[in-house]
Length: 258
Image (cartoon, rainbow, N blue to C red):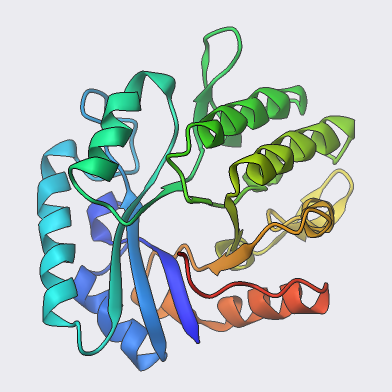
């Protein structure tokens, strides 16, 4: 079975294609479950790279409508990829309880550190930032709002060598996921970003070999996610490569998010 629970649309302002375009691509690729998880807006601050808050209702209505119209063809899930910031607790609860999203996908790009400072993990200049980032993820997972953790090794995107802070951050993230029973996403979009030079060698930005070696030891469920920003990426060669990577390392990815 082919499934993908990490799908963006042109609404997020850095992807291409409508909801209908992604459904057509999914059907052509033999995908039987498609989860729309566009980047969530926040009600009071525009954090960028996401739809305006004023379009959220339209997004939900479109997914709900298509779920009914295409019910005989494909299973459609309604979701959002969203960061965790503690001041938005009521917002997360409204999304789950009132808007009835099927799941929230934790995609932690920015976070507030222990000193109360706002940071974007993709701009870290030292690996000590990874510890605060990992603690922010742990705090998010403790809430129970998030069914799956997107690109859990996103911190390895920075041009920094793997060190003991990376080991410690990995342990914090994985221990929190074990405690919360969270599904880890193996993000295929890392392959699309290509191989780059790092202080400790050439590699993909993510997935990172050391992170996933540690993840295997936890026994946590792992799901491959496309993180597609164009319709053809719903299931492409990078998705196949991601599945093969996991299986070669003794990890059988799950197909359904219950």
